[in-house]
Image 1 (cartoon, rainbow, N blue to C red):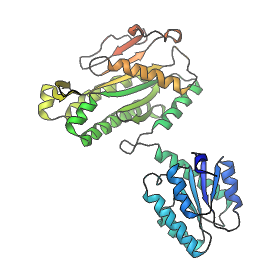
Image 2: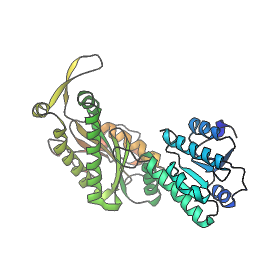
Image 3: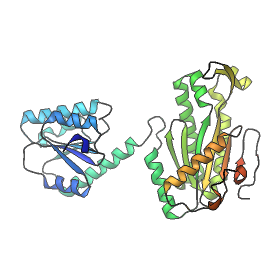
Image 4: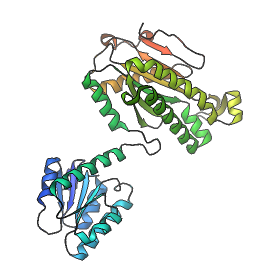
Length: 342
């Protein structure tokens, strides 16, 4: 198998020259893997670096020298930031069990393991890998894969839900003035606000995901949406000013440079939330929800202050870009153009 054929459904498998492991073959077949058998240990690194596989299986049942080389390959895989996130399975003789874990293997199995136990442990390893690689390290919130899964589940269930796309305004200017460390603190603050409000008001019915940067998406039951969005805006406006210096906080702005190097006033950060629901339309795919939520977020960002705007257009009128179909709610000056659901 060539490197060009590898993809995320590929399992790289380093052979040991020993008898085949029927339980391993069965698990890989059931999991739907495209198995790339590799005899040269150096080829494992080459393949893994060129295209990230789903998992890597190192068969270390051979001679002691071969076992040592397999352990060395595992260490090298785990030292590289690109390959370190690929789950590595090692099959070892009993006396090398501890060595394999110390080398960084994500799962270690003895060659005489019970097949049912092996399958359960390997499946759990892949679940851990998916969870760990789809979580943002700074916010610990689910990423785009889990966001898509949550939207798809809600679309398929037919439940009434609201998808809310939250985005910071003037974040880049803040980052340029105060540095990336302070910018990261703001991202974590917003993540905490969204998580605490959504989970506090909706419990398990609420979901919060981190798209990336200063973009977040949370989903809640339609009935809870107005209260959740109001609370998110209220708490954000209360806390965001504390991220600025006393002088900037007192005057409510700072001077920043645009791309031409011209000074201009930069207001304190605000939060824009674009909201879509399936009350007046029927979604068939998660991508449809994402696309419309992005449109509503863009509209919300055109409004002054911290605001959430909900799309109340009916399905047949979505081709119209008129703002008459949008409800706008809350900024620092209070409720604006209310009437959700009117």
